[in-house]
Amino acid sequence: MQKPVDKLDEIFMLRENFMNAITEKYGSYPDRPIDISNKKSQQALRDIALKGVEEMFEALQHLKNWKDHKQNGDATFNRSEFLEEVVDAFNYFIALLVMVGVDSGEFFNAYLEKDKKIHKRLNNNY
Image (cartoon, rainbow, N blue to C red; front, top):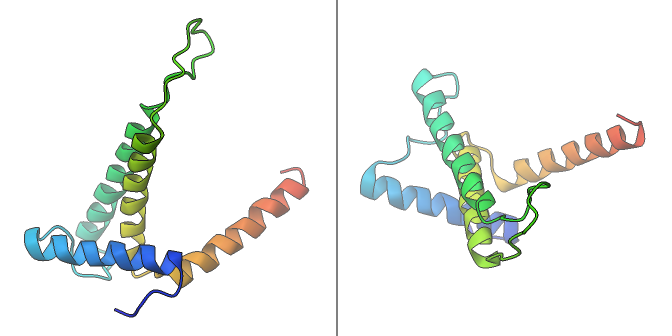
């Protein structure tokens, strides 16, 4: 794999390297890019996506002061643990992209297109 040019490239490279290492050791991921029309591949994508969602729920467990009706709020917050769980989720979501053959450039371009759409919606009172 080539040397990363920017931070997003590096994130994708690190995730793919980890996926390769864990696959070599445990057979965790199918060969990539996967055939997304294949039932087994779709099941693998679903499993990875749900792991990412689970990590987001773990991050949300660190938010203890969100209930409107709670009179005695708990203002404690462990930023590093919260961030670690969000990073875990992000890793699973990046793995989804790697599995279907999306690289950092394609993801970035899709991000820019979506950003344009949501700003257009905002400006048109969507």
